[in-house]
Length: 255
Image 1 (cartoon, rainbow, N blue to C red):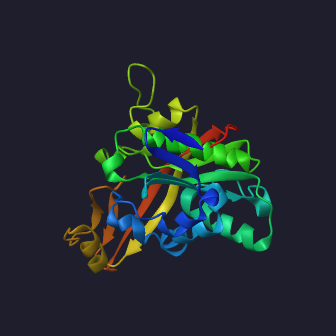
Image 2: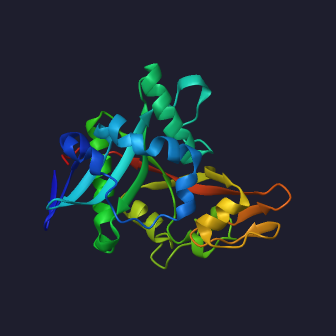
């Protein structure tokens, strides 16, 4: 259990009454991200299926942040620990392993989301620490994370492999969220080139973004880490988001 000021951070399994409230947060995720098929099908079920791998922050009766992770077996059926399909892949593996009885060998973070009113208070760093601790309590010595760099959307045409090489004068990553992970002891391992995929008709993309989507080729979309590929002939646009695999050692301290 972690106290700071009036904010309390605990494993969700210790506060099951909050499972149904974990998504009561004012969020800043782009609309189109919620239409990733894996996310729309399974994300809401993570807190119910894996509460022992999730943490929640509250201030009084208000839920102000959540941190989600899932366990999976990286050794089953020729898998790799950090797959190219990143976020989408580890979520589907986690549910398949739970149903199939495959014992987990590692855990992967899925997201840390902080209420918009609580941004800038260092809460994301504390949530990361709590997530590492709760994973350690489940017997894991590693927490992986397919990280979505928060400033990459400002440089949509820069390849992710090039973007993650950007450093400040102090040697830390230029990207704020990558910097939080590295300062917390995480090691940047590699790019997950197809971590999430959103495919939709042009009408859907217009509704999600407010953009015309009336020309072929790459379309820059606010909040997208890379351009969205538009094909007017097929009436489809596809967004394939790269993330960055980071490896953390889990922490055994109490959360």
